[in-house]
Image 1 (cartoon, rainbow, N blue to C red):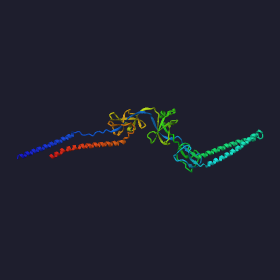
Image 2 (image 1 turned 90 degrees about the vertical axis):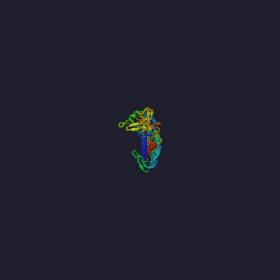
Image 3 (image 1 turned 135 degrees about the vertical axis):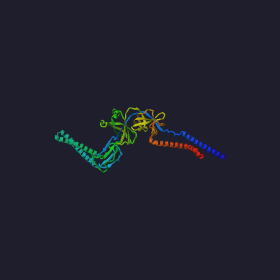
Image 4 (image 1 turned 135 degrees about the horizontal axis):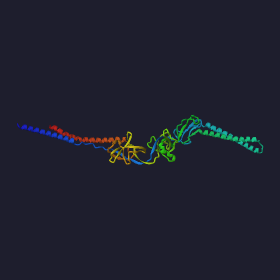
Length: 434
């Protein structure tokens, strides 16, 4: 009877010991997990394009807006009246000097030429007879066989007949000129406009007549612009000293300046209301691409060559009214640097202040860096075209970064799952034992 109570007490003590051991194991596991350091995701260092500030000798240029003007512009008007019987050109065609553009009915003017030619012949016949009669009178006056009055009369008739011949000749020349005006030719070589008056219409002569068409020369061509007073005094006034001032021209659809020329003329007075002076530059236009009236960007140079710092425009950021770049130090850390800008020199921008020769700046990937951050620098030449806009490169970089982060999160989840199961096993065993 005493053995059974003893066995029950031993069982109770053993069960209590198991529960204590299980509780201590669970608490130890929890403490170990709590004290274990948490795994942190590795920091991603962005890789960006970095270039060294360029230092070279340049010449300053001043940029202006202007318009192209033809060297020669002609309003083609008829010089005789009549009916247009022929139009011998296509609208907008290139023509040579002397090419026939219009033909006015020549028949009335040909008839006038024939009539004046007949008058000339009659005048010449009368002049021949009057001359012979006067020569006879000269022989007779020597023998006193003719009266002095008759001699003077024959002399006068001969002179009058000679004058009539000259008048007839002038009338014939005028008729021939008018006949020639029935063929309206190009006075200069160039590009013709459309025919304002077409076949079958009657036109009148004179300066007040409506133009038949217009004609402009092609090459060379002028670019006219208004230069400010300072530019005139520093650069353009040298033209008077036979010092050729370089000028370059670019069209509205061009980013640079594709043509080179020289200043042709400068106006004789400064406009006091605007403080500018009209300048005309001359450019070759052998390909005919420049058309009068087009908008033109003109830049004038002439300063003494000097050293300057140049950077790519893509590297420049805007902070309200400030311009800045990200400078990279020797340890590849990024720093904010405010700069002062100058004019463009080709595809690079002049920096007047804020940078030094040899400085390295971020030229591509500025959206992925912050002041004080560390980067992985990929050196590229300044302005080589690799430094494209961040808008084109940022999405690809963000996708790559997101992919790396997803891989890290997946790896972290795989490592944490066995640990959770290990923590759950003591709790399960404790429940069974209890």
